[in-house]
Length: 628
Picture 1 (cartoon, rainbow, N blue to C red):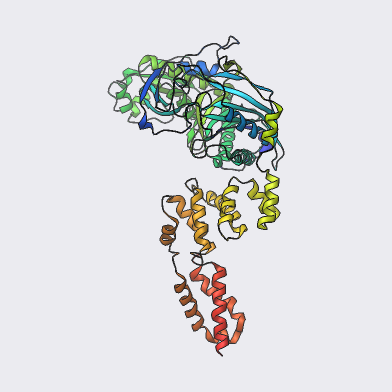
Picture 2 (cartoon, one colour):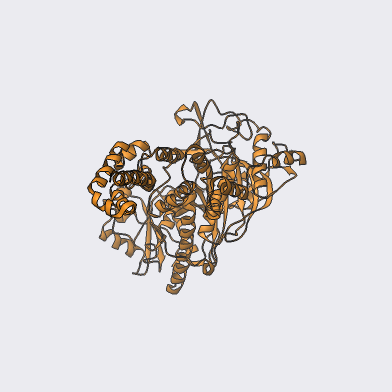
């Protein structure tokens, strides 16, 4: 799956949408605090039922129409720290002025042009993530840019909007949301589709993340920043992949979506060759499974319905992403209606017998080229789920569908809903517009944080870094960590830069999950290194160990790895080596230090800094030569 991709040939176009929570005192449209609560502290709950409605254009958004089909109940948990605005029982207050200033600061850092007047809009969202059925958003700036090694990337828009409620669980047909996150201000930054490689996508995401953090006014931690990626290839379609929380996964997600669309194009051509077709015919096949041993079927009280996909044999079992087959794409649609999907490409399985499979095929007069798909559920649910499966199978014959997908932990993605359109936007009449005058912008400009180039020049002068390393750390998301370490400990700057950039990247290439590593791990490692608790060669091993056991202290990790040695033990060990090599030392003189260094390092590498070992060795050798 990680094969080399020729981006020029496949015609990749990608753009990013970054959503970053702002660290304001209060929420965007009320005076509630922006701190998250322990979900056990909820003091009340209530239900809502949302439906799709027409926008001011007189149209119903396709994504909203799709969500309405699922007929879900939405349950919301409230707290003492939430209010009637979150409940949608009171109109919103005016826009948070602190949030506006932060969003303008970010816009200026991205070379953008702020609007003269900020108007709040409503964006229809009926997946339950907002109690009122829409999200409030406001355009703040347009027409910015970022520089990358592959060329400039335009930054089209920056919006200020309220964060959604947090989904915490599902209870039957009810989806449960927590209101503590709803209304936290966030900026949404959207780039143009100028990204041409997976590596460039990650670089742009890291730059945006670093610019946001450089303000010192954004929230940190899991869930405070989320990335959506819009991806298309030639002969493919634009797909939006939502909910990427790990910047390091962006490159992999782009690659896997390229592979998915390329595989779907191949499958489409294969289906055309076969003359495949989709029959709009749903059969009740419950009688075949009256005595079935399948728990899935028994749970559905023996109710089973099926469809036949002519010419699809083997297609559903074709892998199109890591851990996902074309059958997974169809299953995504059935799962939206709360049912699982089974098909003859994988049966007999799930305690369904070979005899039952043969009867199933006979019912549809299916040949070896056909594939029968079944679901176990009551008729109404089964029919609507199979209708959705048939629509997706028909798409496979014609085109790659434009859709919104959710990112999965391994870099693959799963279907969420159709792409939303312009029909979901209309003005918010409860929130007055905010005029942005030149004096306000001038004041913000005078306090902008340091640029990349200024930071790079400072690092070269202050820490003696060469141009390459200064540029690398100035643009890296860990630049502030680098500064904290350098300001606290007497450590070579090159070692710190290579550790927080190259070493972390190398561990990832080895397949090690470095996400559990926090800033304090690095700070403590360098604190102990500055005290000569171990040698610099051991830093990668300690990081690797802590990545698997992040709760462990650095001192304990040093002990577990076997690096613990006090200086008395070190001096004694070196003294013993020197004593045993007196003849060699007398023969070679001061030149004996080099060969002896290799002998000593075999035992002490990683346990003691090489510079310290060299100094002790020179001292001991000198004592032998002086004693002559």
